[in-house]
Length: 184
Image 1 (tube, rainbow, N blue to C red):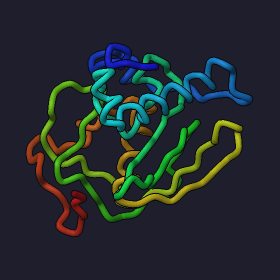
Image 2 (cartoon, rainbow, N blue to C red; image 1 turned 30 degrees about the vertical axis):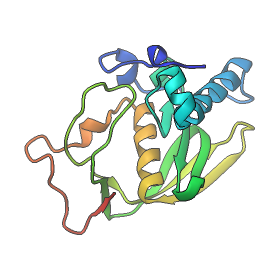
Image 3 (cartoon, rainbow, N blue to C red; image 1 turned 90 degrees about the horizontal axis):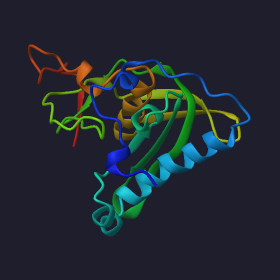
Image 4 (tube, helix red, strand yellow; image 1 turned 180 degrees about the horizontal axis):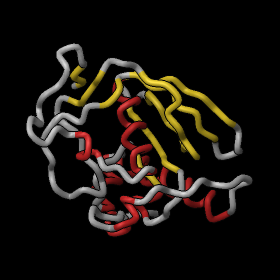
């Protein structure tokens, strides 16, 4: 199981590299990677387990964040009353369409690989359609909006060498299109 010491930190060149496409069928190593990425998210969102292992809670974890330059990311977005809004390991994901409307998290974004708080709105698309492969190699397409869409955009950015703070306006970090949506 991944621990915080296993998370690649900002400044490591792997976080700024474009990850390599994953080939199918998945190797045993890639199957284990997918399992371990999702396991971190599940354990980190469980309050007791989180404390036991001293983890920072996460809703997404991309392979480059554990030192593997491959196009794979796990996403686990919790909803109200112990529901799950979206849970999937995305292999070779690509955003194929997006809304014009912007969205940002009102409290800003964080990242397991970035230890410092970076203030400002991380302006993203409110709705996206993502094409990806599941662990069996089947091509899937999913439409997401609001928080799950933001989480997936954050993780896909990791696969392209982009960090969340790259999206923050340096001169006016809390500026956003008046038509945009702030998500609490």
